[in-house]
Image 1 (cartoon, rainbow, N blue to C red):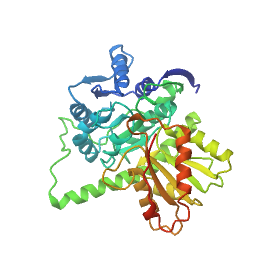
Image 2 (spheres, one colour):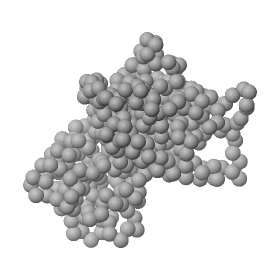
Image 3 (cartoon, rainbow, N blue to C red):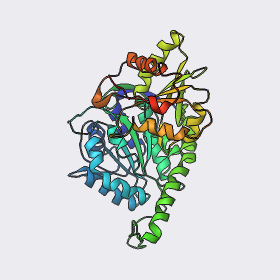
Length: 392
């Protein structure tokens, strides 16, 4: 296999990955900043470069409803959205997860109103974090391209059959031109065979999907759904390993940077990881024993990977790009505290909220977060000193 390096907008790279995956049905509604993805897919279908049905609709709610239908009849299905569009889909997010329909969706993360903002943060996906989908975060355009292909294989695996979201930061990634290593169609065909549904709606063999569940069965059905999502973890690792063998690009649920000897670590999700790397380099140059953890797999949550990555840490500085309104800190920080609860030796967790509504977070702000966190060192109870900083 020979990769071809091409400079392209990351949204276009996502669409090209969908084409290489040979998606058969696409339904979407335009919303900034994801529109370029589906615009390019519409062009590819219209020009005959992708043999798929493209269904334009009047809303995101209908877009995902159409996807539910095309997936249920056995088509490899894709959609994309952002922000208020994801929230308009909210009802159907739970429907397709409960029906185990392996739809793939790109979410170009964007702040939620009000006030109105078209810029990036993670409030849209955090509002949908418990919808039952596999959720993966990407750091750059290459990861968007790679993960888009991988998620079709993950979602459609008969051991999984769970819809999957690829998160990419709106504008920060979606509208940026990057150098992308493409993969040949032949290589993708080898990696991702045609979709063979386990069950599908067909007039000659009628079945029921998403039927009414009496109280006697509802709890059991939701428990089975939760276990299926948790058990998808091993398949996700398996697919990433296969992709690594194919391309030389390897992925893990949590990525580490300069963690050797670190006593303090930053934790980020999405494109700010690369900015945080620069901040870590600066602080290491000053003799501060700091490292970086970059969370890639959000659902299913990689509890054991988190615990392993944090061994030896004294403090963990979590940067959220969403507020858990009325709670304490951000949703990612809350998950970290939950993951480490009951551990004999665990780092103090300090929560910072930054980058809301596209506010810039340069390297010096990450340095400030670590500086503030170190001032809390030695405090007796971290619960009493759990800090929230609105930064940027």
